Length: 343
Image 1 (tube, helix red, strand yellow):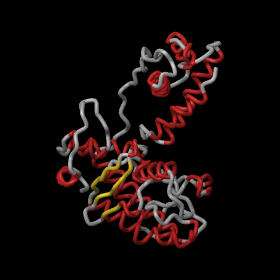
Image 2 (tube, one colour):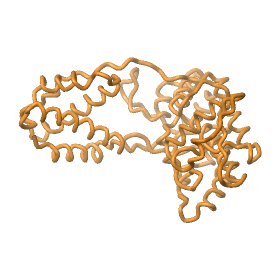
Image 3 (tube, helix red, strand yellow):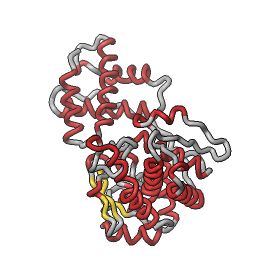
Image 4 (cartoon, one colour):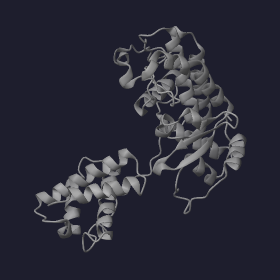
């Protein structure tokens, strides 16, 4: 069965017209190739010959061992593809229209209470201001620093300390960066992908706001509080420059958050930073998404309106909201200052 051209056209459409991220487009492509290869193996001659029973048989064969969320994503991809093909007249009917998406249990990530969140932020700030020899260096984790794989664990505190090959200036710089990362994630509730995408020109210290690029290529402006502003300013004024200086031409002068070698920080490194910061503070092990959820929870507990939190987080919809409600950045900033514990 020939389907490569149709799939390629669909993926381009989803990327350009629907604004899906590169990771989502790649996941959709993998899901579609899996499904359509299964159709091919079943002897289905063409896309027009695919029936809803064929698709249900594929679902039954693919489901064992998969999380419901993974299967739900596959079904969403297949339904979107066949709807696209039908809309273009490639197939006479839509066999996927009757497919039901597996229900996903409504589980919530771990959420820190306000005391735990404050302890985590304060510990990160304390570590950042300590001597270079005592600062953790990812903390710089990931592809840029292979030392992390051999780093010893300190049983007394649960922290993992890494010794960078550079000098104390670099170690201190990375400590300042890590403090700014956890402060900004909690203060803004932004996604980890949005954090690593922040450029220098996106930060406005005069209004304490940051411009981020969210899902679907949608921009929004998010406020942050005084502690986050101090941490971010310390990193950008005292830590970022030494990293860029050492990196030379290899450095990314546009990115706010950098790795040890001067390149833009990636999402895996940020997750490592957050896990280590949580361990150092003695709070439950969390990732960046848990900080995002904690920020939303604490905002709501402080009296913020659900729709204002929706705007801050960049959600297009919520279960309790049928329509996306726009809130001006001035109103959002005012409510943030009133409701957020570290504003």
